Amino acid sequence: MGEITTGRKMVLGLQHVLAMFGATVLVPFLTGLDPSVALLAAGLGTLLFHLVTGGKVPVFLGSSFAFIGAISLTLQTEGLGAVKGGIICAGIIYIIMGLLIQVFGVEKVKSFFPPIVTGPIIMTIGLRLSPIAIGNAFYTTVDGASVFSPISTIIASVVVITMIVISIFAKGFFKLVPILIAVTLGYLVSIPFGLIDFSIIDNASWFIFGQSDSLATLTTLPSFTLSGIIAIAPIALVVFIEHIGDITTNGAVVGKDFLKDPGVHRTMMGDGVATIIAGLLGGPANTTYSENTGVLAVTKVYDPAILRIAACFAIVLGLIGKFGAVIQTIPLAVMGGVSIILFGMIASVGVRIMVNAKLDFAHSRNLIIASVILVLGIGVGELPLPAGLTISGLAIAALAGVILNKVLPQEI
Image (tube, rainbow, N blue to C red; front, side, top):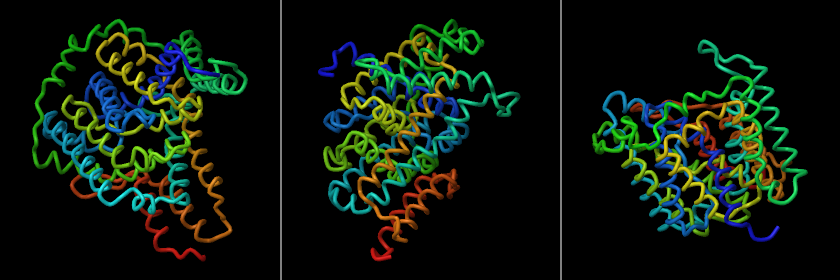
């Protein structure tokens, strides 16, 4: 197709914003933080990540779900300042881990993550997200209960069918923006059903500095309390394994080994710097986003500059309240339809890794490792740890896979 023009890169960047938006603003909604500040932190964090990694890795950094419980508890008991301090310390832990990886070498790290481990982990990342896609696509909330919604199903089906048709049959530039086209069509179809709340746009301020809550969030100083740090910062140790999985997934989609170049130590440091900035501003801790990796898999356009354009869009959305409000009016059914394809793409990348590695599942060793990772990763939601911490099923599954790969003999 040749060189992609600047205008088309802008459209592709907007498509990435649509993919990340729902999850990035959901975390502040669940924790009590400010969504506009979260968007601002995500955009700035993504640009800093690209700076640290030499602009080589096409990722977008958004709000991390792993910190939801700890942030909510700390915000209620100690206030925003303590949350900021805890998130900043989490970012410092990311950087320290990146330095340790640099000292011991990437090959040592990669030896713990061969295809029999990374393949099922990546499948798990996509499959763990699938209930969210199905819930948004086919259900609605009535009196606090989730019930099947024929209207949501119709809208999500329109989105899914549009994405499939555009991805397979469209030509030229249209083939690169199936998500943007599908979201636009789904939005228009949603209007007659009364699913668009235009009052959100009417009530939004033009600029973030006109919103008192956002301004208070930005001006609150960090408070480094021991309990806040203990509650939030150690989660960075748990998220490390998920980071390896996300970077491996991204590299598998693009066809490059980002663990080597620019190096997982740099990607960890990039996450760390982004999370420190998020802490200073009052946004949630940042992490690499599977939704945007799914967009890469669909469009097959891997230019990191497009993700930086998306980051600039996120900053604008964070600063200009009206623009952010427009995106907020996109119905969950529309994003649910998009997510069905995106999350499925991620799981399929895990399958591709194992196929390319020519893994023989006639060997009990491979069956056991893959089985344990899949069942633990999909079946376990969150397990409680001391001091109010939690560990995700994905981290447990990854840890189990790493251990089994090291202790089981190669012959079985």
